[in-house]
Length: 418
Image (cartoon, rainbow, N blue to C red; front, side, top):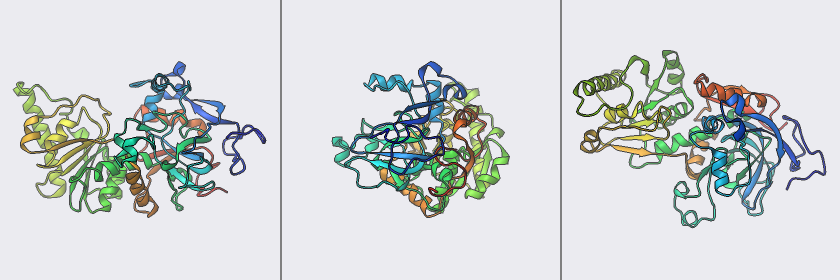
């Protein structure tokens, strides 16, 4: 529990003695009164250090990863995360975001056995009631009504000196990575892992063609590497030819510039022959670009989707017979159309996917530990720049790959507590 027997507050980058929990901590805090663009929504505050329960761990955060979910949290839309939690009876009137972290176990609850004080860990963002009957019975906890994303649907995320997590969220940090690199990929990497390996029989295999939307982004850069790890043929869709080299170095067999096509958006009414013909011509041309890369007429067995509204019609159209479109987001909108004739007659699958369970998160993390997946850290920010890096995401000006924020680590490049 927090104590004030020593100093009550430590500066960012100044670690207290191992195991000592100060009563107060620095955090980047969102409040309802300043919902809006990230540079306004995130503000530094001094708050109470959270208390942990018997199944929890308090982690001293060395670095935090950056994801779009806390752009949404700061905007207060499409969900007011503070109001949603208060409706469920939570007392806190703040949101401390951050759904990726690397750090050091500082305090453990009475029931915790998988980690100990001093362990260097990364944290995955899946939380659930570990005592729920469906979880105890072995059902995938992702289907539990208690499932939440830590640092988005919960407060006490990684944009603070200390974060409160459930013990099962903690995984070993890769010793060869800096704190900031280790913090960057877990949310997107675990999400991509479930999408590609979590939906049998559509698990990615050697020689499979996999179309990956947003290949140069956080999700896409992880998906390309996961495909390459099993010998699949990843084709990246990007917004600029300058991103080709980045994707090819990760293991893509080719890239498509989506701006060379103009048929994106929702499907026209099926009785509108003129507009339907225009869409079909555009989708066929896009499919031919895949064939040109491969040098053969093969369609993707798996389409890795997240733009949603603008792209699902094309994804479903070009997906191979018996293949799967797997989707985890809707960054261009939530209303997506499919031509049901192709869906049922070609026996295609449209599969929703959301984050990952413990086994899948650890499966991804093992590839990181083994050096088979690079975090693709593109830029590191200071703690006081938390709003700035989220603003870049909001304006779609973020660099390729992933971003991170230094919290407890006083400088870039540190690989352990010094």
